[in-house]
Every structure is written in structure tokens, then in C-alpha cells.
Length: 444
Image (cartoon, rainbow, N blue to C red; front, top):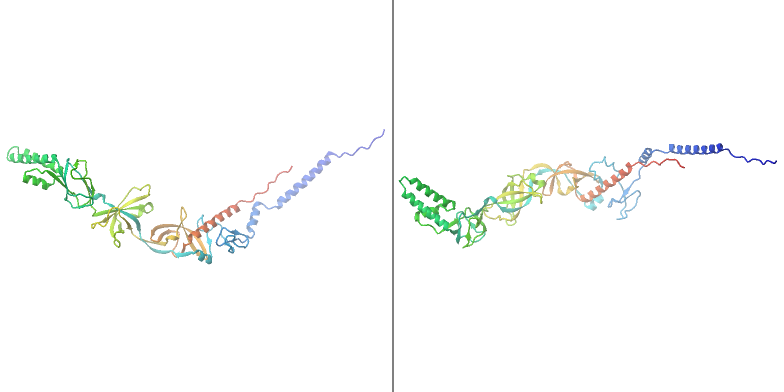
């Protein structure tokens, strides 16, 4: 029997041993690589310690920034090196703004100009447009206490000036005629009962009739004339209660009038009001009693003197203003209701820092001025403003005497400052995010 040679079959244990050695070698290689690779913190430290490239920027278009020299693709100007800046949180100024660098050539190009902060006398003046109005305390309405008919009209048009006691119209009233007769009868009765036991009764009757005529606004002279003549008057003449002008007329000859009618309105224009709208921010500066001046186009070169008589305690919800009533004498009648004029309220002055009004920019929740630091550097500064005096504005905080602030082209400076602050925020946000470490896992 022939036996063929048996093939050599490898043992399973030798194959497993080979795979184990390969896995061990691979793990050692990966581990060595990870040990030699720096951590994310060390990598960030190496990046920060490495020298940064010099960035260049267009002087006219600050949004054009690159890391190599060249020309601006917009205007063709040569790019200039950017100024190295401190971190945003370490640089003074506002979070929304950053310091800017503007060379002298570019300052001339954009017309940039600065002025010094000075100390001056801040006058507490307040200018506003005022409207001439009638003094409501000097208006009188002529009314009736008895019914009748208009017989004669003595004042027959609006605006007619009248003096106190001037006849306005005569009124025929049967009740007035009857009241006169009662008065004459009471007068005769008193004379008849004089010296007797009923003398007091006669006196009471006469007093009652006289009081009735007085309540109907019958003048004392008319009662004396009635006693003198003994004949009742046909018509009652009503007279003006004050001196002024006729501002309302609701009467014609022959008209029938009742006690509910108001035939005339008389207004004294010897003193008038000027109504001034005071804005909410300036309301604290308007005080009762403070002197005021008024100028109107109809009287050029003339200034009227007056004072604040009243300030409304309630704001107008639509205009957000309160009306101040300023009193002025008007004996010559030059100031007429519904005229417009310029009112100057003169408050007490004080010393303070002042700069041109154009130097202050409104940054939303705050006011900003740009201070020149020299060598073309400009720093944004938050300021607190006070009163406005002509073309100047008071600075209560944020600036010092002698500092120079930008008064022209500050809108261009503000735009570049905001842009640089935004770019700095973006660069810091990117630098603060660490590089993600590569994921290490098992590969199957």
C-alpha cells in the first residue's frame, strides 16, 4: 500500500500570532505620532508666537485688506501698511468704534478739520417759535337776564374797539317795562306809608323791586333816571363790561334774544399770551417767572419783553411737548392773535465746556466725538451733552479742556471707525475658537 506524503498544514496559532504582531506595530506607530504631535493649546501658542504678516489696506476704501503689497482694485491707489492695534477690549473708546489712523494727505483730501475743547459761559437760553394767543383771563361774554327784542345796535361789526361802559345795543322787553312800573309803585307805596306803622313794609317792597332791576344788569344811572322822571323807559341799554375789542358778534337789529343767548364777546388785548412748545428734553429749563423776549416779522428791530406765566402740567401725547404761556404787554396793539414770532427764554448761565455742535454724532444710545491723539490717530469718545447755545453745545463729561475734536468729515471718520471695530470683533472671534483635534478611533 502506497502512502502519499501529507501536506504541511499551518497551525492556527501561528496565524493569530502574525496578526497580533501587525496590530501591535500599527498601534505603536499611531501612539508615537500622537505623542509627537502638539496639542491644540500648544499649536495655538505656536501660531501666536509666530511673526504675523504685515497687512496692507487702501486709504480710501478701508474694506480692501490683503497680506501683500499692491493697488486698490476700486480706486487704484497704492495699499499702505495697516497700523498694528491692541486687542479691542484693551483699547479705549466704545465697543462699536475703534481708533483710526488717517494720514495728513488723506485728511486734506476729505476736508477733515479739528477744534479745541474750550471752557466758556453756557447761557441757559431756550429758543422756540411762539404763537400769539388771547389771554383767556381777559375775555368777557355779554349775556342777557331777560327776554326781549333788539331795537338799536350801536356796535355793528367785529374787531371794533370799545371802552368800558360803551353802549352795545338797546333791548325792548315787556318784562323790563313791567319791572320798572313795579319799582315806581313800590316807591309811591313807601312814601305813602312813611311815618306810619307799616313804614318798614313799604321799605321792604321797594328794596325787592330795586334788587330785581339790579339782577337784570340795569345800571344805577337808569334807576336814578326812573326815580327822577317817574316814567318807565321803553328799552334797556346794555353796555360793555370791559375795554377791549369785539371778538364775537351774534346779534342784528330786530332779533329776538333770550337769556340763553350771548350777543357779544369782548376781549382785552392790552396783554396777550404767546404759546411756546417746549420739548420733553428741555422742559426742566422752562421755569415760571423767567424773563422772555419776543420778536415778530411785523415789527422788525423791536423786541418785546415778557415773562413765563405758566407751564402746562400735562404733555401732549402726539407732539411730546408741553406749552409754556408767556405774557407780554400789548398796549399799542402791535401783537395780534395768531401771529408767529421767535421767543427767547433767558435762564441763568453757568460755566462749562463747549465744542461745535457738528463735532457730536448720535450713535443711537450714546453721543460720540472723535478726539485727535496726534500723528493722524483719532479716538472715539462717548460724551454727555448739555444745553445747546447757537452753534455750540455743552459737554458735561467725556472731554477735557484743550483736547481737539473732529468738526468736519467726522461722518467719514465714524464710518471707518465702525468698520474697523467690526473687523476686529470678527478676527478676535475667529482666534478665540480652538482648532478641533482629529478624532482617533478604531479602524476595522
